[in-house]
Image 1 (cartoon, rainbow, N blue to C red):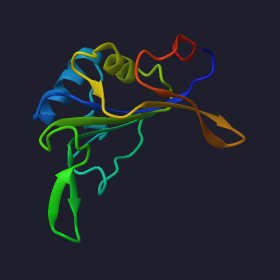
Image 2: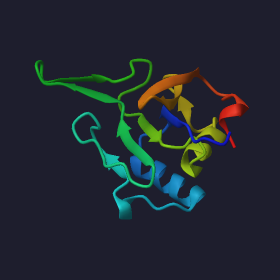
Image 3: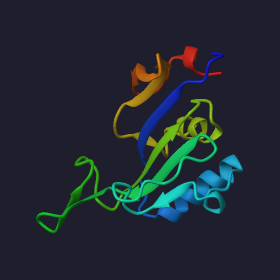
Image 4: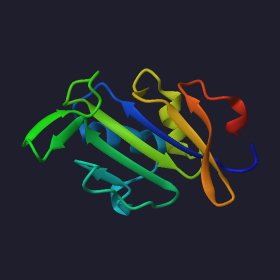
Length: 140
């Protein structure tokens, strides 16, 4: 595929340690996050991180806070609240971090369908949505 396509995914990691996940991604890809503020820890509903180098990535617990009732519940009910999630958006699906997450289904399991988008007339249009494997026509 010659034209980059955007991709978005949320992965369940099977761990309760956010720092472990960040360290794993940094070690395996050689890309450091915290120096560039690419990673946002905590509640990504309240603190969206900046988009830097074509990537937005959140490493968060599976927790949703309800202000009205002062209570917590799982963001994705099929998983425990202390499970770490990686929520990622990339401008190009071939970004090394996105490709790394795809390459490790033993560690990173999508909790919702992966979405691939392209820009048509200035607007994002979904061209594929589903679970891996991703059709090869979208990958370089």
